[in-house]
Amino acid sequence: MTEYFDAAEGVAECFAEYTNATIKYLEHEDDHAGEQFYNYGVRVLASQWMENEQNIATHFTWATGNIAFNKQVEYFKEICQKGLKSFARLYETCEKVSKTLTDEQKLLLDSTIYLQTKIHLFCI
Image (cartoon, rainbow, N blue to C red; front, side):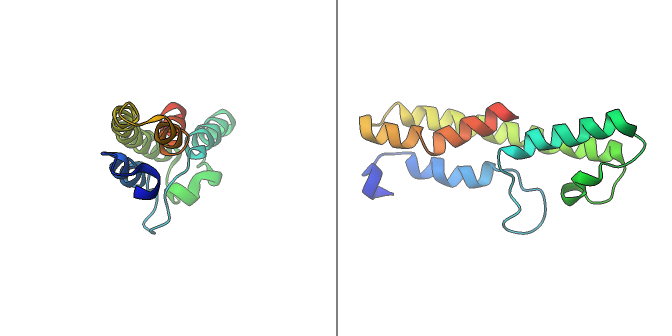
C-alpha cells in the first residue's frame, strides 16, 4: 500500500472497509456480493412477482434458501439496507481521503476503491 500511497492517511482504512461493506449473503468466507447483486435481485424478484407471487423465486434461492416469496423480498430489502448504510459510510471516508491526496495518488484511489464504492452505493 505504501508503495503507491506513501504514508497517506486513511487509504488503508478505505481498502479494509470495502471488504466489510460488501454484502455477505451466505456463511462462506467468499460469499460477498458484487455490485450486480442488487440489480439481479430486483430483476429476479420483480419477474417472479409479475409471474406469480405465490411461488418462490427459484433463481434467487442460492441467496435466500427455499423460503416463501415474501420472505425472499424481505431478506433482499434488509440486506440492501445494510449494504446501503455500509457503503454510504465508506463513500464518506473515501471522499475525505481522496481530497487529501496528491494528483497521482488521488487518481489511483478514485479509480479503484472509491469508484467501486460509488458503483455499489449507486446500484443499491
